[in-house]
Image 1 (cartoon, rainbow over the protein chains, first blue to last red):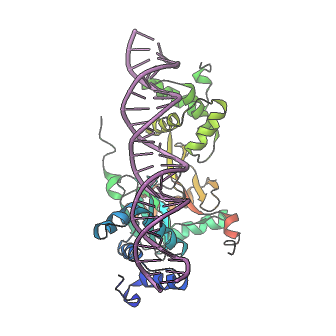
Image 2: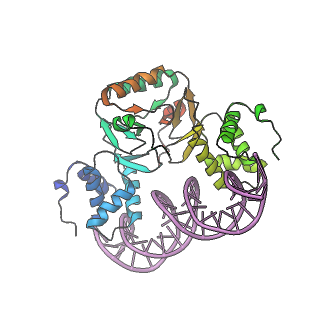
Image 3: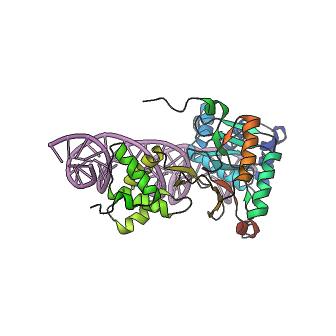
Length: 157
Length: 157
DNA sequence: TTGATTGCAAACCGTTTGCATTAGT
DNA sequence: ACTAATGCAAACGGTTTGCAATCAA
């Protein structure tokens, strides 16, 4: 049923598979598909989106399996999640710590910023002044994207 | 039933009451109590907490009324909300734009930071470089508070 | 008086759980 | 064979809705 070699898997999947074995856990087609999807999807992805996309190719997958797999991966330290402006959960790869995730609370669009130097100056200040270790790379930063910022405020009526 | 003079209300309440009248909306005891609570509670507060606290003194209040009132106040521009690490909604006064809201995703504690100069440098960079207008004062910033950051990682199991 | 507002109850959405069955090892 | 993992269905918590009754204006 599982016909791919562990070694043939790319980054996340191979790490996850090794971790699975080490813990005596099992590699299932559901987990494999979810892993692949997480790897492909750059940026944040919602559990429901994962479910929908896996469901296309593997219709018998269940939503609880998606959640249980995400929980497991998070416990293994491979993914993390935060909540965007509408309160919905978004998962992303934990090793993806070299990005800022800017999420527009109007259109919902997300953008990734590679240069962390700007953020680290801010984070350093918060740390030295208040002892607060801001987690700016794992949790989305809310605001208005360029397009929405320049768009008219709201349809009058 | 409502025995206080509009002018006798403090900041938020008096503004809200004036706005209410202007729009032909009504001042109810439920709205008044919610307004008072929002004003007293510095920082972020969850709808459920508002419900619980109002419920003590006014047992017949309904959760839907709390939500509807918060929606109305947000539409009036008097309050705003964001979502903390566990995905739960937190409301706060909109005029409270001179604070950074640092929320610990471990213990859930929140702290307010008055000095915005540090944040604005960061926000300015994001704006000039990417056109993204980060909303650092309205949405909580996740991280670890000083206490949790210095605490042992987790009970060994 | 009268229409905005409420409480109620049910619907809703995303997530979680218990359990019998399935399937990776 | 052993037991982790799944699908299912029901429960859950927070939020939203339709509607008849209420009450601020």
